[in-house]
Image (tube, rainbow, N blue to C red):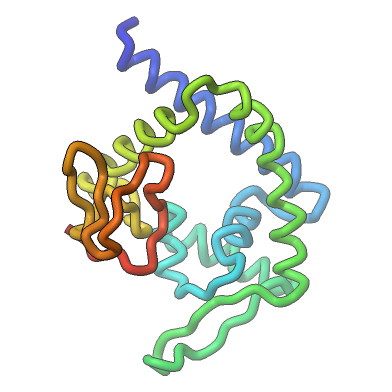
Length: 182
C-alpha cells in the first residue's frame, strides 16, 4: 500500500473514531450523533438550514429530521432573518447551548492524542491543504479557510495582505470573518 492509500485509510479510521466518540457522548444526552453535530455547528451562531446542511456536508432531509427533533426537545428555535424575512435562521436555546457545551467534551481523547503529535503545526498545515483541495473540488464547504482567501499570499511564507502580517502555519484560520474567496 503506497503512502497516499495508507493516508486515506488512516483518515477514514480517524473519522470513524471521531464519530464513535461523538455518538458515545450524545446518546446519554438523548441525542443522535447527527443531532450532536448540528448543536456543535450552531454553537454561538445562527445559520439557515441550507447553510447548516452545507457546513455539515449532509443532505437536506437529514438536516431537517435533526432540526425537527432538536426543536421538539427545546434545544433549537427558528427566527426570521432580519435581512431577509423569507429566510429563517436557526439558533440554540440556552438549553441547546448547554447541551452543545456538554457534547464538546467528546473531543477530549482526541486532544490528548494530539498532545503526542511531534509536529502539530505541520499536521495542521497538511490538513488545511487537504481541506483546500476538497473545497476546490466542491466536496467541502468553505468556512473561511485562509488557504482559500484572496488576501493570502506566499512570500517565502504565508502573508495576509489584509492584515499586513506574516502568518505561521499554525496561525492560518479555519473560519476567518474577513475571508474573501478566490
